[in-house]
Length: 204
Image (cartoon, rainbow, N blue to C red; front, side, top):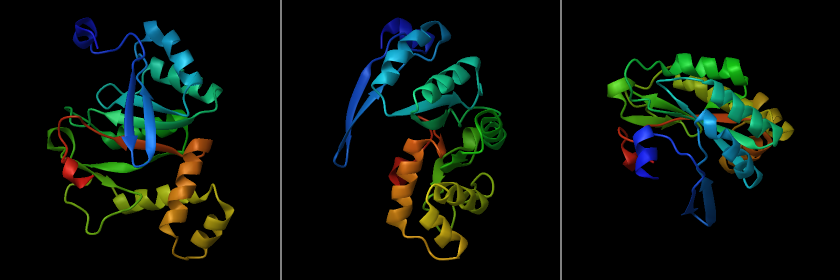
């Protein structure tokens, strides 16, 4: 990123970052979020499988957020929403989450919840594999959010849905596999919250 881009706090082109996770090589294309450079997003989508829609917890959903969402839908790509800056002042994560669901649909479900908000934010809790006991300060009803997440995931698989409705314990590997397929197919849109400043990475 050039000094000018750092000063303006947004990119004007689409650099590529390469990283490895387990046995997978991941290529991340950082497209410009600024409206004047949205044309650079289109060729990046051609080479992509999944799109991360980044929303600032301080600014909420913007016009350009909707434009990027529409472009991803037109290409039939899986989508993940990432809510950044949850350590900012006067943050209401759950109000923003409801705004996201009202704008983009009820298939947008949180995959994690913040532990503490604003300057008290210090960690996230994984709703797919909900820990017990929960940390103090988890925002909102984690158990209800966990149930909603599981219901949304299993709705993409008739066999898992039948097991779930029958009260049977779900196999974690089967649930994980269904989750991956559901995200790729667009029937589940995970919502993640994060901060690049206030988090204990030892808990990941």
